[in-house]
Length: 496
Image (spheres, rainbow, N blue to C red):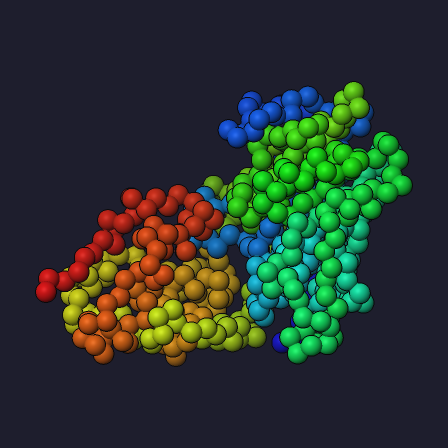
């Protein structure tokens, strides 16, 4: 695949003008949004004061996109998507800073790299590009020889990371001037991803020709980023790590930041209210770009003050697929068409061994010995999971793109995609289409060959609710309740 093909989009869209397509109520630029009514339950002390009007800075915060370019569309009430984000930015028009915490992706396969190119086009190649992107642990696993190609035009921050690789994009900080108020933005990583800890020396077979990434102490990285800054400079630190570690780090940061943005994958939604650690406001950015964080930052009596407002990126309530910037939708559609043209679905199939070492046999093979369970399954939506993709693809008002060729969508509507002997495509493996028995119970060849003497449980030995959440998660099925849904697929063992 030629990963450079979408690059002309960067140049084309860098000169385009975003057009707001759906009217929404805009807040006035002169009025401050109302202060939130109360802190999170665990917050010991919320930030209460409103930033002074003379020096306040308005910031849009997000992070941990994890490759979610837009909602999958399988359920109503889904939030997020780059098209909706760009529409919101265009309609507001008065953000001083756009900050993306980092970890744009979760993996490094061919589809992930295509997603990165698409996300970079939208975030950095269009009118009003983002001001900074922090380097997260997942970002560090990307091929470094592609960094400059993927992130052309982006300001990438790694304040406590050092690397001698000439393609290394990380900068220690970025300086901005907001109506006469100096601002410095840094990004700190608390620990390297496991794959890079104790990395082999450069030139070894495991890491040919790649200098290792060195992790400095976060406090030292922050001090270097703020070196020489004037006292009136607003310091903003994006910090990758878990919540407890971020809280423990803040008192060590000198000079004290005006704002710390926590980037923690365990916190799905942004902070509704800042927490004060000493005098420093701490917020968290949430995940997958579902809900953005609108921050007003200023100082009062020399101390930093911040207030926040959540921005849920919801779609149209009346038009299926409605909402979102049309130029961004075009970029996303081109990405998905390219995925089909490059045959990514087949390339990513059968990459890993099955969990139990057996082979997939297909749902029909289960019917002979399990007629009761089969009858229950045939009445469920799982038995028609593949057809829902086919119908969605055929309806231009819903999707209008090749859903049945996109791995992220296919994986939750078939059996064993990505596993050896698993689903490849409908033409090759029709017996593994739909969410059949082996999707929950694992590959069944050994079970069938032993006439049931080798039992099958749930994949990984997890509880039923945890297994369902692999597809019906907080993003893809926001209204999913296991207790309500289990009766629709309930079945038991056959009588001996």
